[in-house]
Length: 154
Image 1 (tube, rainbow, N blue to C red):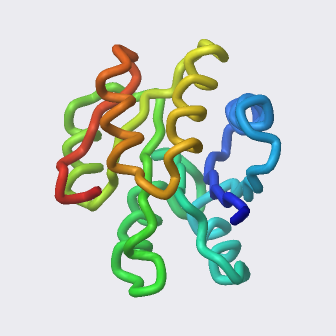
Image 2: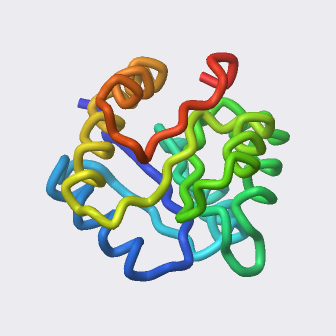
Image 3: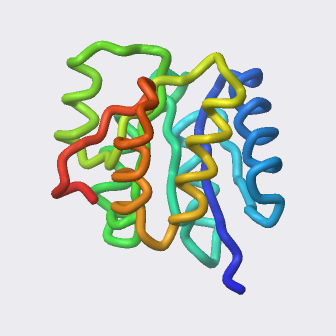
């Protein structure tokens, strides 16, 4: 069985801890690399033999924020096809539109609820090979935390 790899870039340690805990409960075989900013995420990516199935990028981070990192990812031939899910506490439509225009597959408003986070991660990680299907499932799940970006980004 192919190992599943995820990259999370988020400077909030509480959010990172909750994410990793939820991920471990969903699928203990997933390898999750964590970075505290976009620059560190790019360094981790360059050190990996195998690219992650999905990257979760927080918007607001020091050194290199999520927008800057997303631009770098989408301009790099090695990383441009990795699905990127933007995550934030912000529910501003401008942020969601920017995520779409920059090439993210999905914009995820961070839930305070561990159960909701687990549900989202379960759907995504069980469909890493087909992110389009995972996003479609999320969209129809009724969760209010998900904003699906344009089909062309999938």
